[in-house]
Structure formats: C-alpha cells, structure tokens
Amino acid sequence: MKKSKKSYIIFSAFLLALSSTACTSKESVKNVEQNVIETNNSENTADNIQEDGTIKSLVGNIPSHINKVFDDNYVVDADVHVPSISKADILSAEYMCLEEQALLAAFYAEKTPAKETGVVGITSYKDGTSNLTVADGYTIYRTNDFEAIRFPIENFTSENEIFSSGRKFGEVYKQDELSFMTKEEAVRTARDILKQLSIETAEEVEVYAIDFATLQQQQDERIQNEIAIQERMEVSPIQDPTDGYQAKETFTQEDEFYIIYFTILQDQIPVTKNSYNILDGDRTLSGSTARLLLSAKGVVAFEETGICQTTGVAESPDTIISPEQAIENAYEIQNSILSTDKVTVDKIDFEYVPVAYNENYNEVKLTPAWSLTVTYNSGISEKDGEEVMTTRMIYINAVTGEEIK
Image (cartoon, rainbow, N blue to C red; front, side, top):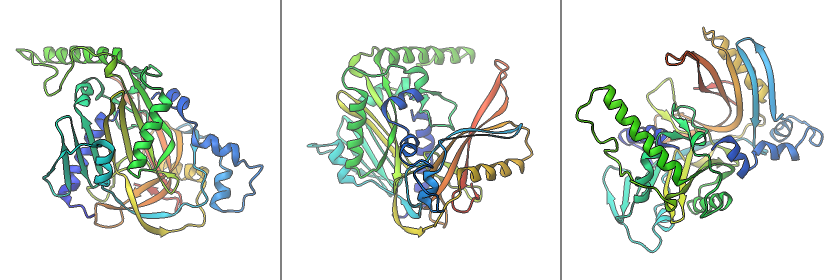
C-alpha cells in the first residue's frame, strides 16, 4: 500500500480538518473505565516483583505519580501511565486502509451502496442516507443525521486534543448519560463495531453524552456569535450564519447521541493520538485516532486516522529507560533552549510513536517512547490580561533516550 505525495497532501488536509472537528471531561472518563496504570500498580508493585533489568520488571516498579522540582522553570507533577507489558519491540508498520467488506458489513448491512472511485487510493460509497470514504491512512463514515448536528459540535474537541484552541466537550456537554442507552452500553456497542473492523482498542476511553437541550443552546449561541462577527465587520446585508450546514431549527430527544474516542493499541501498547511535523522534511507523522458517534438509530458517524498495520519487528530491545530518565533528558533539552518559560510536566505516557525512516510517506517505525505532556506560559492575553497557558508534547525515545521530533 504505497502512498503518492498527492494522496499524502489529501491525507494531511484531512488531519487538519479532523483535529478541528474532533470532538469527556476527565471525570466522565473515570466513570466508564479505570486508568491503565491503576490496574498495573495493583498487580505489579515493587513488593511482589523483583527488579532484574528486564522490561517486565521495570514496568512493574514504575510509580503511578512523579513529583519533582528541577529548578524554578522546570517542575514535574505528573501521573504516569504505562501498560502491563513484557516487551517493547520497535515495529515496522504502514498506515493501513481498512478492509472495505468489513466496513460495508458494519455500516451497510443488507444494503447496496453505490461505489465511486476518483482520486487514486480513495474509494467512496453512498446510498442517499450516508456516505463512506476509505483511503490509506483514514476512513470517514457520516450519515445525514450527522450533517444536522455538525454545526453545534464541530468547534469542540476531546480532552486529549492538545493542539486545538477550541473548547473541550466536557466543558459544555455535561450530562452523564442519555435515556436511550447507558454510557457503558454505548461503549460496549461501539467497541464491538471496532472489533468487526479489526481495530484493537485500549480499555480507557473518552465518552460524552450529547443531550438535545445543550445542542440547541450551542447552535443558538453560535448563530448569534456568527451574526455578531458580521456586524463588527460591517457586512451588509447579514449573511446566513449557517450557510454550508444543514442546521436544524429544533432539536429533540431523538437527536441525542454519544461521542466515543478510543485509544488504539499495537502489541498491547497504546499508540499516541497526536500528530507532529518532522523537522527534516515536509511530512506530518500521524498518531492513531478513532471516534464513533452513536444514537438510538445506530452509528451516526465514524472517523479514524493514522491506524497502522505492522509488517515486522525492526528491533527487540532488552530494556527501556525509566520515566525518570526520560524526564532528566527532557530537562536537558529544555536547558538547551534560550527560554524563561516555566515548564510543568503534567502527564507521562508510555506509547508507540510513529517515526519516519525512509522516503515512503506511508511507512513508519512504531517506536516505544515516553510521551511527556508539558504546559508553559506562552504570554499574556490581550483580552483579559491573564497568562496564556500552552500545551505541547515532548517525545523521548524509550530505547535510545533521544528526543523524537
């Protein structure tokens, strides 16, 4: 499955669009699934595992939280998330195209949608009520019902979306459950669909209950905001603020749905959700994401990007560096930058991170890494005079200790 540069540009554009529409509060996540690290620490404590230098023993002795002050400008106060593993191979992989027959069985059971082919490597299916786009590196399935609710939700993001300035879903959509199905049932139903598509997911999820009253409120507020923007710009006459959307006049309980975000696994190790630009080229390295919207009618929308299939084991390291060593290395990296920003490491995750290793945009090496979520003061807001806090990622190769960038 080789990807042309043209297809890659389309893929990159999709990533940008998806990040703006990728749409639980931390409390909601905890209500549905236990954090991976909590399970590991309850079974693999320092008291019942003898440290012998292996990956298994190192993982068993990793603390669930690290609190350390390096200096006034570098502080660590972070939960540590690591799966229960005994190996951390570097995997050769490629961005995959989901199996079309499995997608048709999942979304078009007993239906015969029309197949369309256009750009090389991209296939579409339509049946008048929905459309499906399948390509190397991403899949999009959307129903007409999704188009009706897109306007009031597309400016919100998931808790894990760190590169967007949009508000988080959990800040606005705060209802815990919906009447047509419990949250646990929704997660189970959605996970079964992903299993049909041969997508392996972690137990931890983000899930949001999108109720009709808040949908209505958010649509009304956005319409007023769009009109206010036009008035400030002295647009005359005022244009339709919902132009380009299938806005709905009144939402009802039938319009309610859950949005569920999954973490993708490879060999029991989570794959980073984030994407980043490599410094020595023009390509974007995509993390793995999967989002499914589920209503009483069924699947409203499904989107995935950056899911890989492994093609072999590139390297089998005997051990990995500890999160403490990764923090030390990140501290040295921070010291090499001429900056007075106060940096706080808020979260540490052991993940696979895609790394480029040849000229083929579709092929990567999934490399075990300590992913550090970092916040820092990026300036003062002109609007209210308060500090503007920015989040970024530092990826430390768990085998070599070097920064992945």
